[in-house]
Amino acid sequence: MRSDQHAASSPTYQVGEQLRRTRLHLNQSLEDVTNQTRISRANLRAIEDSSYSQLPAHAYAKGLIRIYANHLGLDGETLAQQFSQERYCQENRLHSHRETEQSVHTLEPNKMAEQARISSAMAAICLFACIVISFAGFCLYYKWNPLSYLTDKALVITHSVSSNYHPADPTTSGLQTQNRLSLQAVFYKDCQVQVVLDGQPATSHAYMKGATIQWEAHHSMQLDFFGANCAELQSNGTLLPPLVFHQGRATLRLPLPVHGP
Image (cartoon, rainbow, N blue to C red; front, top):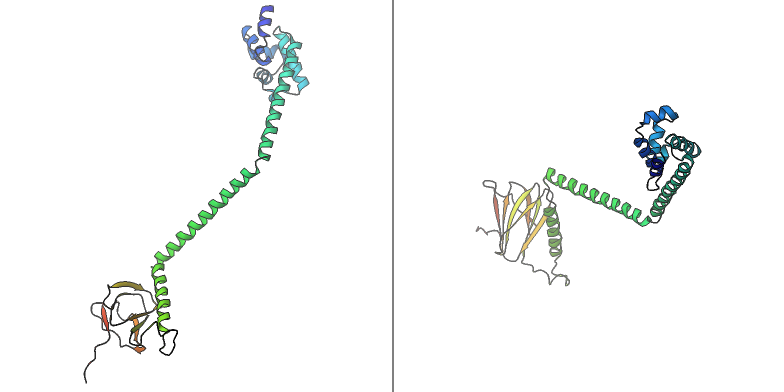
């Protein structure tokens, strides 16, 4: 028994492991120890596993260690003191670990702020994506082309500058000549128009209902309208008669042909 006690009391193992090894060497089960010492099975398991947080108050736990060790033929007082040191060291390690974690969280406010900024940026990106998707859905549903709308507005602004010409105004007399051809269209409905000015390559534009456009040329212009009765036309301030459409297309050439008497 003394040799067993010496082997079991080796400082290589914690108290719980020494008690487990000695119990198994003596071929005793936890139920055997519980029946003979009145120590509950849960407390015996916590002692052998060094689960200090599952044990009762420190003074009472030391008494359990002393009873358990003496039952196995070990030095109960010595193992009880060793158990106190082990429990104290573990509690100190846990306390130090908690303080370290608290200090790390306290010293990293910038990291927390950065995470908040990332969250705000993601929210802004999601909001922008929702706006873009909603706008695209609106354009598809109403078949509205914003690029065509902006082009029409730009043409109106450009032609409004040229329409300010007056021969008696020296500030505009250098911009225009009195003999230029001018055609203004006010669209009643959406219409596709192909335009040829002064023999230049044809350009095609889609105009929406309510748009007002003015074209100007030096010598000649030809416009093909694809849509019956889609616009009111004025040439140099003179209202033109409605165009004659054939198979959904009408062609207007300026200057108008001069018919004899």
